[in-house]
Image (tube, rainbow, N blue to C red):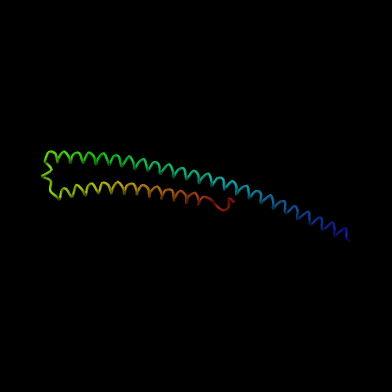
Length: 143
């Protein structure tokens, strides 16, 4: 009787050990999958950060070139005005026209700034959409 009880206990312990071995194997598989997903997520995050850095650099260069072009236009405009002053033909320009010229200068500067900010907002929105798309592609069933 005691021998039968001992055999049953050994059998139950062996079953529990086999079950635990299966559980440990599943946990190891899950750990490997989580590590793989973590690595991939890290790589994608690094890639997104690099893309953002490149986009910002391109925007900076565009901004500098746009500013340079606007500065060239402003310089040409100022030269023309200076020549008109030197020729005394500017005396024919009324105060209203002088105010209009100043308004045009201010508008050109505002347009340049607004274009830059609109492009920056567009890039940020694109990045936000891309990030949301990447996050939504990750399904919990992959874990």
